[in-house]
Image (cartoon, rainbow, N blue to C red):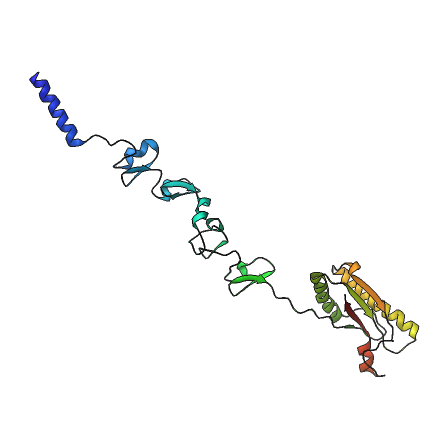
Length: 235
């Protein structure tokens, strides 16, 4: 009996010296948490200590593996980021969360916008020029210069949703009846070209005034050239 008591005493002493394993979730090493697929963090078994303990698409937040999209709640403006999905709102610009209209260059802005003062803004459009289109003597065909002008005018009409009357004119040479027909043909030629450029035909009216409304008085080439025209009357 004495021998048995001695053995038990030795075993008890060894148990005291080595110590019993601490119950879960207490731990001293990752090995103690392995059964639960966890790691030891400051004496406690936790789901993760770093992002490396989480599977792809997840990150360690508060010792929990959470989808990266959940980081949005903590990623306000100026927070570090890798993509737009890392930000609560706006977008990721140069690895920092920024407002949705923020930019560093024109490349950061969607089509039709440009970077102005750090923000994406609508591109400034050239002022619409509705000066008259002119024609050669006895002509109602459009010159290359006139076609270029009409392309700009067509853009203005479409963007502003305008309704326009095309007013044809002729110089004083020729009969009044002939000049009336010629002025109508000039207005019709301009309308056709604008419609070909995408302007709705219903937005364009035409009228011919012949030689009856000269813009410049005189019987010389300068006056005649000024009077051979189509004017644009906006409604």
